[in-house]
Length: 224
Ligand code: FPP
Image (cartoon, rainbow, N blue to C red; front, side, top):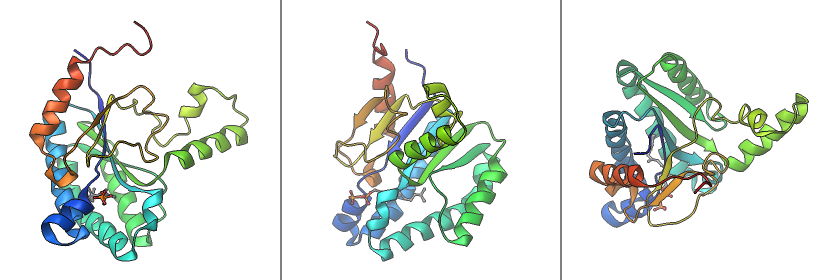
């Protein structure tokens, strides 16, 4: 059976779900947050150590201001109300991406990371203002600036995922098959599961089915 340390998820389909079921995209984001909570619990039950969630990409700034504000308010309220509980559950929160938000949100993200820094049960990597191409370009710039030789070992030191093992598998919900500038380097050998369900419909049963299927895969990493 394959070891399982790290799951990455592209939580796609909130907007479509919200429009279809509640008449607004933002209602879909609110419902999507409930799925986030369910999946965190199930990740702990499965003793998985790292969960990386794509919450906001560098491309998502193109969305209407109203939707962007709603998303960041949702995140802010989630952190204010839940960070103590996450901390009690021994969960570590790490932001991957570039923290260029309001001063208030930046401070909240920093304090949440600081508070949970030493926790060991589960590490949640929340990708916010994250884009893989920017991450890689910045890493190359740092390699050059520090006159490091260009090799894999040196490059990964400058990725936002430094010290985090590569994802064993990626789930993308929402019936779309693409990577959307997410962890392009880190997913090089990950298994990929594309799910038809929209993120707010995705549940523990779906997650456990994927985990079970992943464990059965014969992973060769180029070998035979
Ligand atoms: C993609 O669906 C989803 C997002 C861009 C936002 C993800 C946010 C959440 C799951 C809720 C908030 C999470 C936290 C941690 C506070 P989409 O809007 O692109 O859906 P669509 O493809 O149907 O338009």
